[in-house]
Length: 293
Image (cartoon, rainbow, N blue to C red; front, side, top):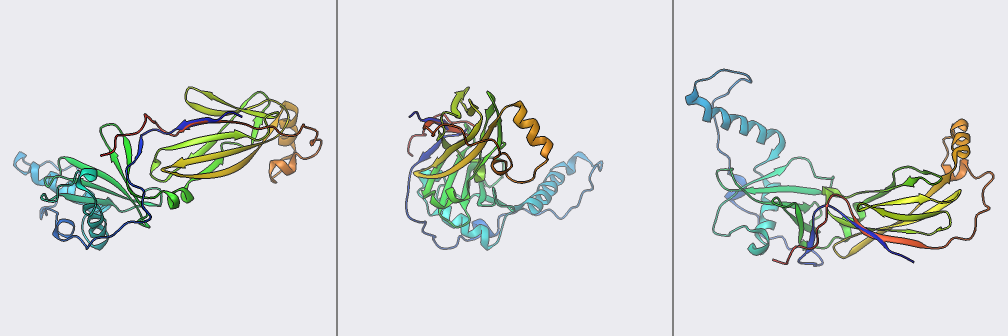
């Protein structure tokens, strides 16, 4: 058997894998009173004196912050406290400095709190972090190269949120099929595909992408494995490999039942399955592991 693997965009470096995260005391003024305020209101498209440009920029920034981000309150304070409780070597947050923190109002991938730390003037990004809403893991993204590093926790609960599904249930004979992966926060992962019915379909890797080639009419069972930070989620997917006549008959029937039921007639003659699998990194981009900090 062969392993076919693919790695995602971004590099996942595991620096710490622990059972859970300690939550230090709630942060103080750094997270609860950090916004400048502008009392002047400016209409969109208004013509103003140059002397008021700075005030207009501040007002526009405040409006955007209040509309899309959380810049104060208990939720942000807890997130900041967690980050400040981690080793500064991992977060690049100096305990002796004050930062401007903001958190997206919407969860990223319905799972991560997305927090950014800026210098107090809000001009320089210091760090970008993803905190699981169940506090089971914390990631950091490095903007200069897009790499991702696991700072704290385990990815076991994260893997339960990963979606593994078919791009389409039907693979044309001699055509290609695909397995798609959705990870909260678009985090990097390793994907392994194994053909459990090699006589019907095999796995191919082309230009860093895995695909399933339909070699004979029949059902193809594919085992997909997604690995992130020491844990793996597995799922078996069934495809139907059809020739043009099969596809035409299937479309003519306009069936709404699963293809393995609707196309069961006339099938069942294929050989016993053999195994064939490939492994590589899946997703956006993967360039190896970042050195531990």
